[in-house]
Length: 399
Image (cartoon, rainbow, N blue to C red):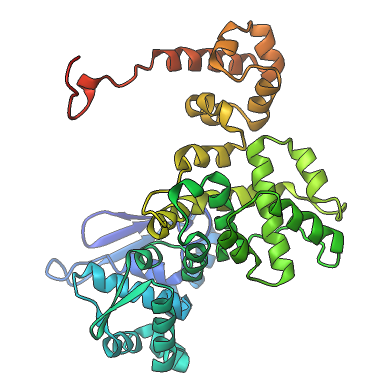
């Protein structure tokens, strides 16, 4: 942690972030702030150590240490993402796009290209541009390329470009009313991000494949979504089906132990609680992007039918829609098990909760403080007033 005193000195009281220590390069950058050109020709820095041993370690590690080699983060991106990021930068600069040669010249002039050598040659760049053009992420205006609205999703957000291509293929042409919750959840599973979530699969079991592929068939998903789910090897297809089934059970309020028993029927020694939560959380991360892509590729230019805000909350908590009214107020004030216990006890609507005595509520949530929270939530929800015509930005005519 750097603390600036007068402009010619720096006192460093600690070199640890919450998750990792500062690098040598970051330390050198901080001490370099001692002294300012035009104010003083010299500066001083002080590194505070709590013991002689720590002093020895800090001196040898940071003061005498050599800064780490510079590595371009640009070079970490695969060609599709790289081209999208460059075109997004050009769009932000209010240009009318880049020609193919300008795109190649820009990429090859970067530090990433210097480090990567032939990895970013013109052939690779043009192949990436052509694939993006075919996927409708890039459009060509005369001799210049620029991102389409769909391409901007890939260029401006942190999602893999390959994921945008897959999700767009899955949802392309569907009217908004044919994109309910389960369709958007299924489309999220074809993404590269979800494919990277490890989920227990018995790859040699024919019954495992039949069980989960059959379960997804019963969801009656649009043909384009099923086609994209299948657009992989058999193991990946089964994993996608299994993750989608897990998310649907999570949202239906199936108890975690019953979910694990079902998902691990052919792998008794495995654990599924972590993968279930990881899949729900990663799906939640992508939900907004999936909805945005769905609106862009919709056959009737309407937004998906799904309520993304409600679905986002349900994915976070793992609860059915009929108790979201309470979760909208209490959120994590109650645990998933509490919401499900209230539901099983027939206390999932506001009238039933309000009419229940404290003993009945305590049996469901096992906590007096949670009972008080529920009572407070009911009062708060009851006090909410619907927006009247006079409160709207443009009032409606009086009747």
